[in-house]
Image (cartoon, rainbow, N blue to C red; front, side, top):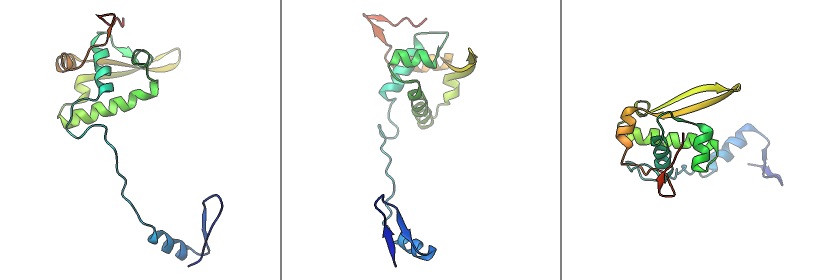
Length: 141
């Protein structure tokens, strides 16, 4: 079986059969996903901060407000929501019954508003740490 390894790491073979043989000889290692918390664990730190922030307001917060208060980028919010969904699935809670996500438009830009439902407030009050500034709960409104 003849193949050539180019300087940029590309492997060239003369025929498809040679390529298939070469691929079959490669050692295949299964991917190992690193979970930050073991299965069945409690909420992660960032998810707890997110929920604590939502507990401070009844009107809800949009993506930009959440990102600013948590000192994260707006693109860091979807992983937080995925971790909450995973937690909810493990604990047999419906995330849609605890947290509402409503997309609206402001100045022709899509904006997502996050609000805890009454059931969500009852579920998370006392379980997540409320954000504090100078010893007082954070004013988000």
